[in-house]
Image (tube, rainbow, N blue to C red; front, side, top):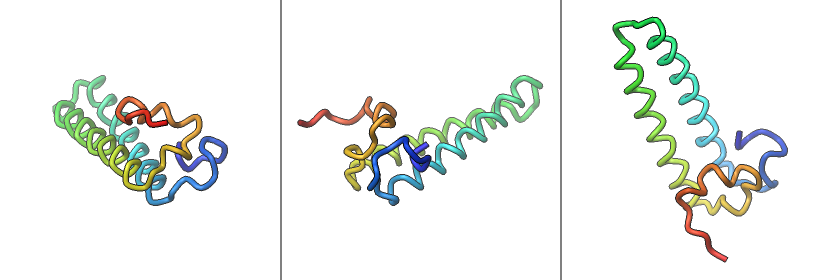
Length: 91
């Protein structure tokens, strides 16, 4: 989402955008795999759900940290609501 044209203002630091975007993609792929395993009642379902949750948590923590490090909040535009739960509102 962070690398899609029109979602954010120009100038969004790529040091934030690429890790955040690809972390989201990896998390979404793992969620789909875990969901398919749960629906099929596969023996690996529990492990896959754990992996998805761990990767998603690391992705969220990484995105929040990188946003703070690279001051990316100012460029997020419509995508701002994603990490807004954590960021202090500074004016």
